Image 1 (cartoon, rainbow, N blue to C red):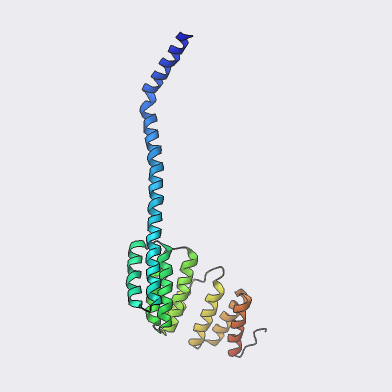
Image 2 (tube, one colour):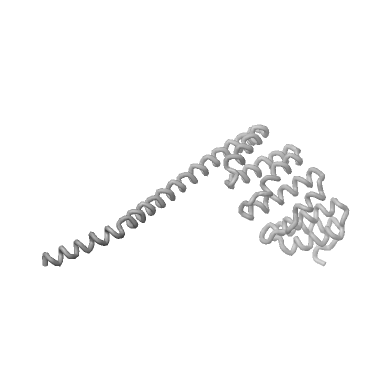
Length: 209
């Protein structure tokens, strides 16, 4: 029995001599991977917290009517945390304030960055729509129409079509506007559909025909 134990022990020693370094290396790599993943998660959490803090500062500046300070902080947010959704959301916040202040051109400029980002599709589609609205407010109808292409799928499609109709009306293209409004009606929810019907009526068109 003692002989068998010694034989097994020697076999273990021999295996360790041949494979020990690989085992240790594997353990080290596994531990490093776990630690690296934990550090990466912690870094991501710190980045998200910092971006959220800057967004709050921008929202505060907007609420106080200090749009210049908000714009400066937005530049910092984009520079430091440009991949964060907070950068796009802050752009929306500032652009809305600029529109309310009657500065559609500034709002369009603020939204240009957001509309060009590789962000979640929903946010980019909202940014394109809002920038098109701002461009329309700045009397840049042709640029606004161009920005609406391509039309998105999903919930925002009706709003894009409706805005296209508004812009075509502004351009004097009545027939094309009617077509856009009809398409918007087919896509819109009940509340928005009623507004589009009013716009068709204003053009002398029976929405039910």
